[in-house]
Image (cartoon, rainbow over all chains, first blue to last red; front, side, top):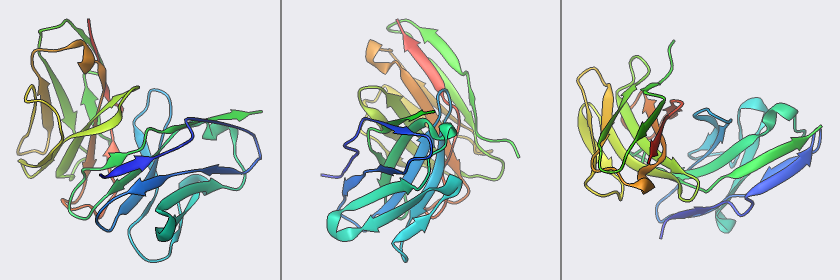
Length: 113
Length: 114
């Protein structure tokens, strides 16, 4: 079955600390992988995406993610978190030719001043 | 450039009623997708349209329907509302018909069913 797992429902970090949000997927075809962020009352904004090529992808707002095929993972990282990063983060998987994504259940990030 | 516009932003209905939600994609975008977001189920795919054609449909009952117009604007309709239909309905648009670009999401229409 196709699925995306974000094992951490909530994560709290101090401002300036590093961050890693985990994402594991199960998908039959070659996956397209995405990380989106959602601030309260807002829609989703794309942080970064992986289609092919270099397995370390850079995104907006200083985020990066690494695709590890052997571990079926696509973890999101940021070296130094800012208070404005507090939001909910969603990992998603899709395939070429469709926008029928499968989303994870999200990780809510809290940032302590 | 205006983003994806969804109307209405908030609405309250009672069980058994029907509702129509509207989505205006970013100018020039021809692909529109709809997602339902709930605390329990997260984001679930509803429909995908490109050039007025439904290309994919999620696993929702027939009470959920949608369409896309020649100007790429899209509507979705939910008939015979149930309490469980309370959710944030998100519309997203993309320039291309295939998944090679970014999905741009609107802020959503929050439906409450009483």
